[in-house]
Structure formats: C-alpha cells, structure tokens
Length: 478
Image 1 (cartoon, rainbow, N blue to C red):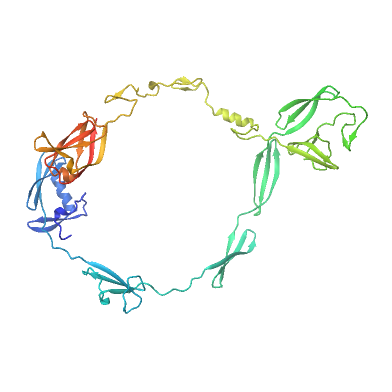
Image 2 (cartoon, rainbow, N blue to C red; image 1 turned 60 degrees about the vertical axis):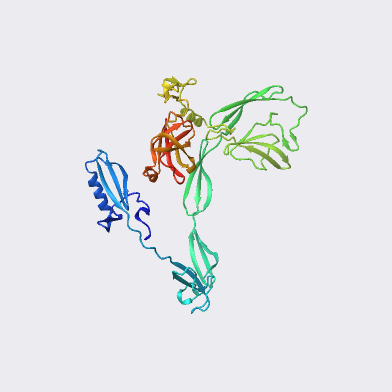
C-alpha cells in the first residue's frame, strides 16, 4: 500500500517480540522490532505500577503527540509522525486464453488442451498470442484400467474358505478367509432342581456351558383323602419340584347302571371300578401313548402337565404347558417370580426409620428453608424479593445512533448536542456506563457522562457526527 499514510493503516491489536514496525527517527524511516518496543515499554513502566491511559493530546502536521498516564499519576510523552504519501502503484491484470494446438494459431475463450496466461498492465485481453505464456494442461488419454469382474468362493476346508477374484484382463487372484467356529450341537448335560445345564459344542472342538432356570413344575399329584364314592369329594395334593404344595377337591358323580368298562376302546374305569389316577412318567407322551379324553399325564423330566384332548383310532392328542417363573421383576408380566428376586428387591429399599433432616420416612416430609440452609424468599436484593429473578445490570450491545438523532441541548457546557437512546427496562435510578468505539472515544467529541431515564439513556457531544455511529456496549447498573 505505497499510496497510504501510516495513519490509514489498520492498528495492531497486540505486540509480540517477533513483530516488526516502521518508525520515523531523525527524518529517516527505520524499523522497530517487537522485542525492542516491548523492552522500551517495560523500562518505561518500571516503578510506575502500570499504565492508566494513553491519550492523543496534540497534532501538528504529520506529528501526533500521545500522553501516557501511569498508575502513580506520573506522565510521559511520545510522538508518532506519519510518513509521506508514497507513489501511486501500477494496476496489473491477468488474462487467460486457450488453444487446441501449439504453436497457437487460434485463441479460444473456452478450456482446451493448451492454456495461455497474460500478466501485465493491459486491462483488456491482448490478441497477440506471443504476449501469453502457454502450457499444456490436458495430457494424453491414459491406459485402460483393470477392473474386478467377479469374486467367487471356489473352495472350503474346515473354517477356511478360498475366494477367487477375476479381473477384466483375464487374470485372477485368490485369497482365503478364516471363518469363526459354528455350533455343531446344543444338549442338556445336567439338571439340579429348577436349574438345567446345557453344553454348546463348536465345530472347532471347543465347548461352552450355560444354565437355564426353569419354571416351577409338578413333581406329583396324589389322593390324600376320599374313596371315590358317588356323591362325595376326594382331595388331591399337588407337590411342585420346589417343595411347594397345593390341594384341590374333586366331586364324584353318581355311578351309572350296568358294567361298562370301555367306550370305543377307551378305558373309563379301573380294575376296582375307580376313576383312573393321574399318570406320572419320566417322558412326554406321544401319539401312541394311550389315555382317555381329559386324562392328565405329568412328565417329571420336562416338568410339564399334559391333558388328552382327542382320540382318533389309535392316535392320541396330548396338550401340555410348563409353568413359567420369571427370574426378574416386571411391571407387565403375569408369571410368578422367584422368591430370591423379591427378597433382593426388598433389601434395596430404604426403611421407614431412615430420616431426612431428622424427619422419618414413615410419612410425607415437608422441608423448610432452614432445613436445607436455604435463604427465605422474603429476603431482598436491591429491594427485589428472592421469589423472582434479580436483575443487577442491563447490557445493550452494538447500539446504532443515526446522524439525525442528535438535538441541541444546554445541559453540559461545551457539549451542545444530545442523543436519547431507547433502552428497554432502564429506569432513572440506574447508573449507565457507555463504552464508545476506540476512535469515537479518543476523538474528544463525546462527553464522558451519560444520564439514564425511564426506558432511555442520553449521551452528549460537542458536534453532531457526520454519519451514524455504533456504540459497542451500554451497561446500566441497578
């Protein structure tokens, strides 16, 4: 930027030891390193406790004098002088043309095999091909690539599969994949109470076991009282495989007349004329297991109670279901749950003798503010009760003030204009702090005070700004 003064350049926001600055010393332009500048500032600050402000205090020609005020209220001064305006730089242009051949005989504006680049002071593209530097940027067509036409599994040995890749140039390549072990069998290898043990055998010769907790099953059903006499009730006792028992009565109907022992080949009475008892065996019934409609059969191995529902010739239909006992608590299951699960759930509960702030859990607890060390909502901050949000300050950012917003005013001497800024929820009792843009703050045009009102903040100026200004932030303290 040879045609700009130093004052027109952007300001540095920070100084590091690797920075390089330009200064004028004894009418000569000299460079100043960040290290030199930092060292000089450190030496100047030594013993003063820091800088309170740096203010432009006078301008004479290109020379600007700044006053540094230190924390101990002592002052020092330094002068910065703008350099002379440089010479106007030359405007350069870049033009691009294309050609299908080289040497170039016909220049094109659309991309082609050759590209020409012109760099110079001509604002319009030259028509002379010699004024361009030409490059070949589109090479010859490359060789046809080789693609995969298929991947096929061609053999298998144990857990290893071999695959063959066929390419478009009629060549092939093989690779192998080692698969994980498959399950060869799952069998029950042990049983203890309601717990069955199953073993999973894998194709690689290894095995693993897991346990299954079965639902409650019936171990036996026996007659405990009664003699099957007509018009009387017999009592039967069901014993489950976990030791629990359950009794139920069966009413005996009146005996029929005659000596009927079978109906269509189905036995209906025993040797002594009794109703046949429940059949108990160690396996599930099959279609050839004889019985009669509604006869019960209990499989002690599977823990399932079956009932004969139909007979067709020598084919018997049996239906059965096991009782499912859940191994965990559920809000939706209708199955019984294991006793130990209920016990575990109850041991995790808090007893009614437990207290909160000395109050037992045997009834509803009401905590006061003093119970938890809280501040009562009747307390106030700046006159506002703690039952509502407390506002200590209001912040407004990037507030734009139009040039026509200024009006004549005589409140403060030397500041003959004011601008009233609309600020929601501000009251006259608040203390406003207006933070101007650095250029506006150092111009000396704006008063260092502001006044708050109902929904407004008023600022003052010596002269009306020539254009709109933007205030980075306005803070109103309660």
